[in-house]
Length: 63
Image (cartoon, rainbow, N blue to C red; front, side, top):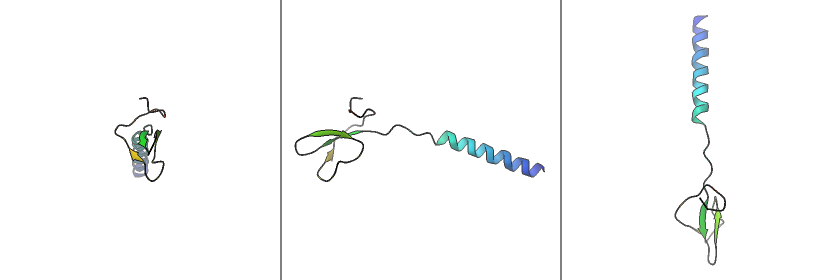
């Protein structure tokens, strides 16, 4: 009985620590430059686009 209780306690402690580590951060936005325009997106809009320096939290690339 004591062994089962220890295993259950250890499993509970592991699960609780995993939930603390699994917190997600906000996705980053980047400025992408095409031939004649610059846009703000999380991923590349397609071939021919170059990612500019810097990352932002807001979707309008203001911060």
